Image (cartoon, rainbow, N blue to C red; front, side, top):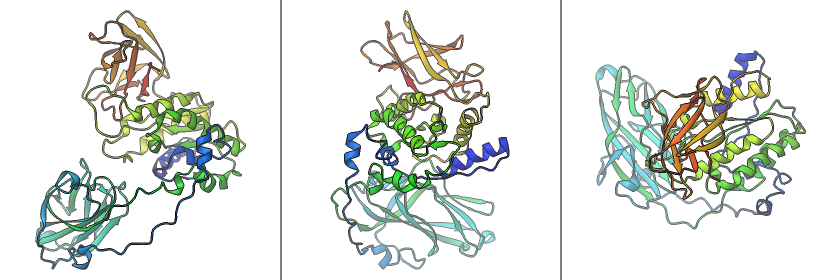
Length: 457
């Protein structure tokens, strides 16, 4: 959220040349109910009851039994024995290490010409699940303690040598698949030379963690906890508006989100004693594997709840489907998200008469074997985002059985007409209804993407 809020404020400053202060209250991976006060949760008895939950004391620190540390596997002088082959990028669950939580070491030798020896370099190791320490020729050049940041490390002047150089990575993972996320950059850049680090590495297990009983959710997941810690202290401030970017941690139970998001907006306005403050929020971007057939999707249900929350007075939503990454819940593209939020702020908070949103579903009409969809926020007209496809994608249609199939869709008189030869009597349409609706390309002429929607409820 920090980068998004920066670009949001920067864009507004460029418009009005008035200094803007941002209060950044954010904790990754937390559910919406932890950001609402107890008063704001009164309509949700289950959450109010959960505010009384306490967490047990954390376990005592466990002494590391990592052989890689005791035997100095990162050392340039270490002679490897018993190491096996591993392909980076990839996860060790998929390469012979099933159900392993622990520490795994990886090593690879690269050759550097004498003309580049001693120069500083950039080491890109994509994204690693979960934590890592990276060594070059025995010297640590970087470490990251959790999975989401991109691994961009600097190799200082004097570390690289002419000829053989050793890169060693210590990876720690406690749950799920450990390893290296695909479709990210893995390379060493020194001078005018780029060394591709994808492909064959060696690995060896340093430590296996014993099985643990499922741990309770951390205290910042408790309803009201983050409101009390990170919102309540600021309620005496006079604000211009709110910006909200969250949702992934509620995907497991998405149906209630369409009640919780308005409850949060109402609660914050009440607590700050500013009932008319603009409430701006980000609809979740695409994430996870692409599906080739119409499917049910919790992520889509949650986005639908975000769409319905436009019923909140003086609210605005930034659609970001096109800005996601299938393999990264925290996509790197932040600037356009901030700029789209700024458009909403310029309209709601500053009163500009501008197009601030992409097309928003309004109504549908069945016309024989076709369904016509009408939108608001069409700006200068509906259009198709020019990518590899020159026709509308990610529309699905169904009859009364709600068995959705891919549909043809065309723009006609600033509406979209949808049909399929497989559905003689259509009743319902969905658009971009998937975790990652890759290829969704309905926009307005101003270039802002349409929100996902469904007509079946």
